[in-house]
Amino acid sequence: MESPTPGEISADGRAKTVPVHFSHSDEPLLLSSIHARGLALQIFDGTVQSILVRTSGVDSQKNVYAMLRKKYGVPASIVRKPLANRMSEPVDGISASWVFADLRVTFEGLGATSDDGLLAITTPGSFAHAASSPR
Picture 1 (tube, rainbow, N blue to C red):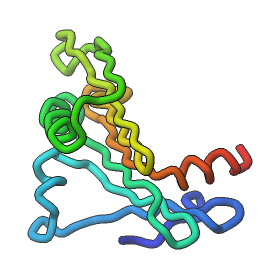
Picture 2 (picture 1 turned 45 degrees about the horizontal axis):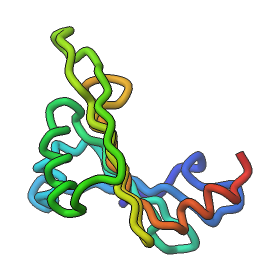
Picture 3 (picture 1 turned 120 degrees about the vertical axis):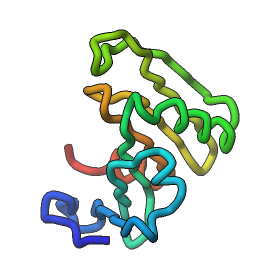
Picture 4 (picture 1 turned 90 degrees about the horizontal axis):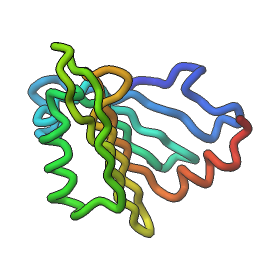
């Protein structure tokens, strides 16, 4: 883990986003198997409330979605969004979410480009803090 920068700490000092890095030999299989580009923890009052994983987009979205479906079952919502990939050929981006009493899992297979995506695992505490934080 590295120390958060001032921009990664909330105005009240209670929340921070902390980037996490692993050496190749210590990298969890989960991260290497989904070609993760980055992992960050969102911490509120000393407790991890969210895990954010940047994925490699079109290169990993099918594998990430399959892994999430195996772990969490059928998503509460799923949308396929068309986006041009690197070769200007259309590809569907997967947008899915799973909602549980104590956890929400959100997956965007493709982000602004076909080379990035995002997996977010969040607790109700993260929503409560976001709702109460000044915008």
